[in-house]
Image: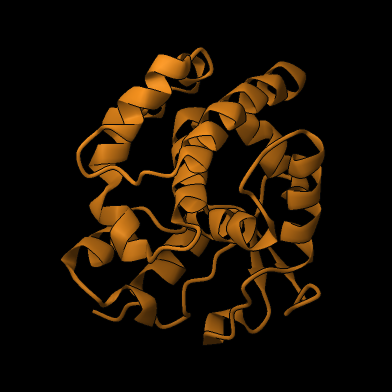
Length: 200
């Protein structure tokens, strides 16, 4: 079975690639989890993030952003002292801050998913060339979304992090065309083909 080359490090990455990466996400809690996993990754490998995923879920009430938005200093201390947790106070504070900003987007747009998918009219984007493996770290779409999120007060969500989230949540399909996931996702979801968008 053919897969994208980035996921072949171990069984955990293969499982994530086969079952989650690139599958369109419309559930806001899952959106928040994916987004915060990308934020937690800053300076770390994706392998480390996946291995610590259950610790993150335990620390952050399974990424229930309404619960996280009400966190206090005691919660920050609890998380900082959790065995196996990444002890970055700034990242922990960013997750709490982002949960509050997430609520604000929900109040304005109905859901974060409606906000995010609004950038592509609800369609999965297929950028020309990406299916051959020529995938950028960020592009014009992630630049626009990251700039808007920053304006809204989100933390640790620059254009590179946002692009990774767009890939993970299926807004952009960056599976290699020979990967067994590519055609399956394209056949099951509405798509739009675009030229490479301010690639870097």
